[in-house]
Length: 366
Ligand SMILES: Cc1ncc(C[n+]2csc(CCOP(=O)(O)OP(=O)(O)O)c2C)c(N)n1
Ligand SMILES: [Mg+2]
Image (cartoon, rainbow, N blue to C red; front, top):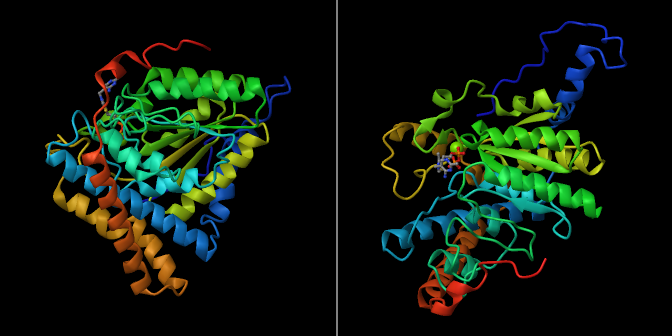
């Protein structure tokens, strides 16, 4: 899945411009330094306990999303619903490395997995999907507009790419308040072609903001493949024009994502400004629940499931660490029961009172 990365800059040794700027080769080296650190040692050395935790969290997302798909089919979830199945290692690998007391996260509409990665109660996430008062956005946001200021999770956004500019604002707030936090701003391969993404990269680099831009490259934007839409398909290179170092990461391996997170977060926390990380991943399901899926073959999807599945990979790592298959089956059973309980809770909870239509519309106090 990981793409071949080029190490040559195309510029053999040149001297600087005579104005104190580094020679061309060195500048490129600085932009590649994080990638080179990752290439030296790609996989995070997780303890058995950590690995088990990653596995459980990824499985929780997978089972949650499968159930959400079923509830959608039953008409219990209205509006749009974008499932995260296949991409679980990205949210878990990155968010497990955050400092939850300080750091903020923002993403697009494919957001259930990012919420679950915080360890937020699946009941209230499922209740949000079914539009119930107990939901995390009081049943008024739905699948695409989950929000939790308590966890510093700022959505859940339906406008493609808009969350990146907002993420720049969150990073500015971290810097302004000097709170030591960073912002993790996720967006898709399709969103990566939006102009505001590059306006944000420019300002973030200019102001040295603490932000990690994460492209979740799941190979498609609705029905359009990356190859059909993007002149530069190596998204991690797209920060070069703004002197933002890029990282090319296998987003189907939770240990590689976690390792990349360690490197990127350290760089940002040390005051070196933004990082652009591309996580190469794949969504198994349609763009949303109403996707006719005519733009790719079943074999392509099946091939990814069989060869690259992040949960199967973690399972293999656990087996290598001596964990018995039976123990993993037991965990799956427990998670399925937990998700069934979340679905029951969501179905049986009351809808919001009509008066809720008038709350949370305007911010009354800043
Ligand atoms: C500004 C804007 N343009 C178009 C759309 C319609 N739209 C919704 S999702 C999407 C594709 C985005 O794909 P990508 O960024 O790769 O994210 P993914 O769905 O793969 O996670 C489009 C074009 C939108 N919501 N907002
Ligand atoms: Mg995409």
